[in-house]
Length: 266
Image: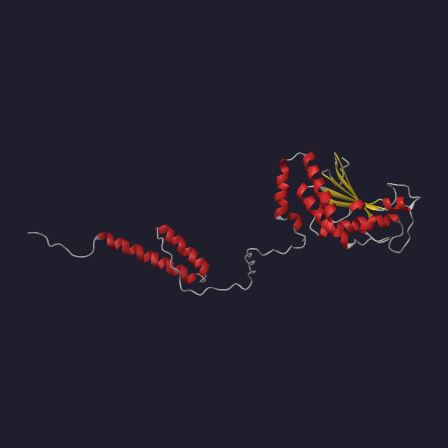
């Protein structure tokens, strides 16, 4: 006698139904345990779709949350609109522009780097219209810039003049791009000074060098690459017996070098 064939679904349907139930339970649990963040939810859906080969994108109906602590994004530039020039910030010394320029310098020889730095310094001097008030010299150990004190300070004072600051902003970029350390030297003439703030030319020259150093640090230069020194009237460039000679001797010098600014005695 022939056996009666049993009805019902094929055996593989039971396995498929179990798997579908387990997947549904898994995603329900995930959804119940998570905060509904529309961006993260869409990313999760995208991962699932890619895993199953689904290419249709369908957005959910969830309300996106607003993060009040998030910073606003910059407005997209308008074609033809000129972007305003930003002032130099303390982060400029480590800005991507300076870092990229410094990397480009790696393949050049020290002589080529020094020549390029000299060109940029001279251009900065020309842009600030220092003219005859500045002098730039180059040697195997680095670059020396001499600037007459009349451009930087009022007589008998150690407060930096505002018109000198654009030059120092350019100097900040040069230091960053070419990897120089900087020694700032303050020099005076032989005329004695005796005030409550400056008992002698030693204090005056030191304060002036320190004023320049403090400004450079405020623009983001690493203090470990800077030092200042007051030399009073001990290194004159001209005879102090004339007013012209004394004017030459009142100056600030900048020595850019790759050598250590703190010599080791060992």
